[in-house]
Length: 365
Ligand code: 5GP
Ligand code: MN
Image (cartoon, rainbow, N blue to C red):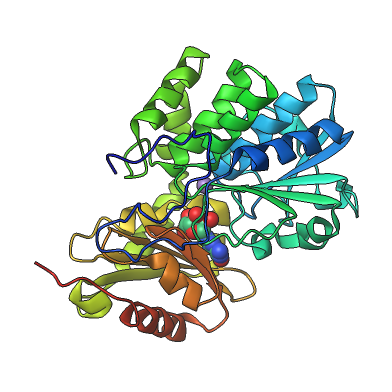
């Protein structure tokens, strides 16, 4: 979106006044971090002898890259630091296996019951802490670092910037304020974050400042070519089979979303089992399904072993899928959001369609 302000400003800026054509105005109470917000967090980090850095469940490049970047930086400063996320089993997706600093990752059991300072990265909602939720709520300080518009700020402190294209951008600012230079391992973690969340610098939240950030990361030695191949262009053969079945199952509903169209499909757990595909490998399936030109909104439902469905949805700018997913108990961004449902496939799709129908949709041209 051209004309968006730089992500680094000295004063708090209300998000109101950055309208996106066709989308409802961002929530008025969301403000970018102020100088005072940054200072409080720097003080908390400075005072802590032990810090727990956590990503959301089934972490993506932004969540885990951000946590590991701060982990590497604090380790340099001699802080006792752990990185974790609340999944069991706790699996780093194969597409993120290149991330440096993974020796800092510990299982949920190794996170203290009452952490001194916990910092969450890219966690839009406390429930996305998964098995770490209780420990997070018991932490003496819980700092929420995030960029989701739907984040209500569940910690004791927040650094939430809904204009930042990635949490990694906020981490860059945090490291600058901590006086930690971008070395190659830290820059690689941050590149994974910003490249993931901007779709390789294609999405509208990408600004000149985002490219300037990428420029500094490349100057620090990031191998963007090998990272990109691992992030976007490497899949198992089994994934191709799961993808084929999911595309075969896809439905187009032209009347949904005020006549702008919905394309949706789902992946049964049995397909993953049959082809030996771990669940984190199908996170990119939505990027294929959303290519359908006939649909404003795309939805992929991914079945878990207990029969629950993880929904991933995307929109092209006319519909706020964070609001639609919010109606199903989830959230995210206007263009990319998710939820978990226990209703089964037909009722979940029906509920999602109703949520879309309840949203304002600008008339088609
Ligand atoms: P994805 O479809 O890639 O899993 O998620 C898209 C966006 O929606 C991400 O920014 C993610 O953080 C957010 N998201 C996904 N699932 C949920 C959910 O259940 N609750 C909330 N609040 N956000 C979600
Ligand atoms: Mn993110």
